[in-house]
Image 1 (cartoon, rainbow, N blue to C red):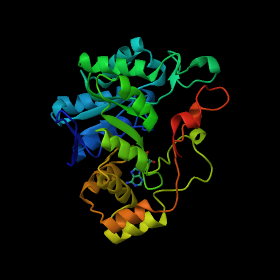
Image 2: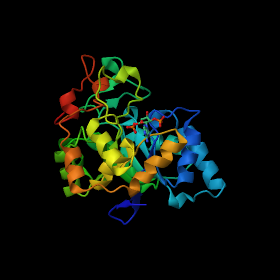
Image 3: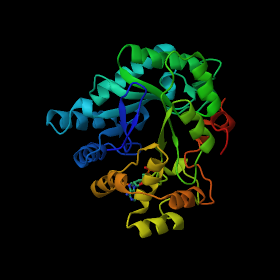
Image 4: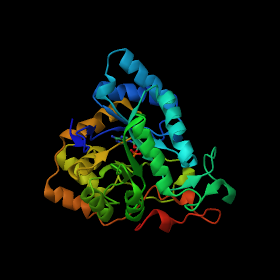
Length: 318
Ligand code: A2P
């Protein structure tokens, strides 16, 4: 298994199982299939509303000697409603109870957007906190405390742009070690990727296959398809691989970890086998110049007239 390395030598398996959109009733089996197939990295989050079921599967796998805790790399994420200093550790403690673990390997601030305690998705202006109410640096202090108390081995962020990374880096005692962002041939984010690499921040690509199983409410009409894009399909055909494998290998070749979601046994195995797929410079260049820029998870569900946040707060470029 190819890995990325943290500063202390800990290793992150480059392909992980994504669990966003994996429904309770599906994710238990998906996690067990993944572990059986050889996955050792599972990507979770409190807001996915399935951590209890993931935890049940992890517990089963460890009790039945399929895998040892120290062989697994488990990531989870702090939801927007727990950004105040005093709310961060309790949120991770709840996740640990759900996942049936003593610690996670990596804990991320899920979004640079803050809601009042108990709010799932803010629907009114009153349900939001602003950056003035809860600065990102305060949330980061809570994340650092989670390392101090051993609840997580590593901390990082998700959906952070360069200026927001700089903002927390200025006052950080422990530097962010990961930025999990949307990355694929329609969204290369070269500036942000280069900034992270230059500052020792590892990257994980989410929605590497285009997340076409998103709820209709967070999907636009006529979205382009990554898996059906003619360039991706052509390279897949030439290599005797699937389109999904080409997209996963694309991230691996950029030295970026990748977390394809699947709840299907064959596709879970197939996605891990992308580790063996080698793309040459010409194929990488063709995929990088596909001629289409598109962000599937555009964060517009956190912006708009009732929100103190704008798309410009989230993204420096599209
Ligand atoms: P399923 O869970 O039924 O396999 P993303 O990782 O970008 O969020 O994309 C997830 C979507 O891609 C899901 O609809 C998932 O469906 C589908 N998917 C996962 N792996 C493959 C694959 N190898 N081939 C085609 N579709 C896949």
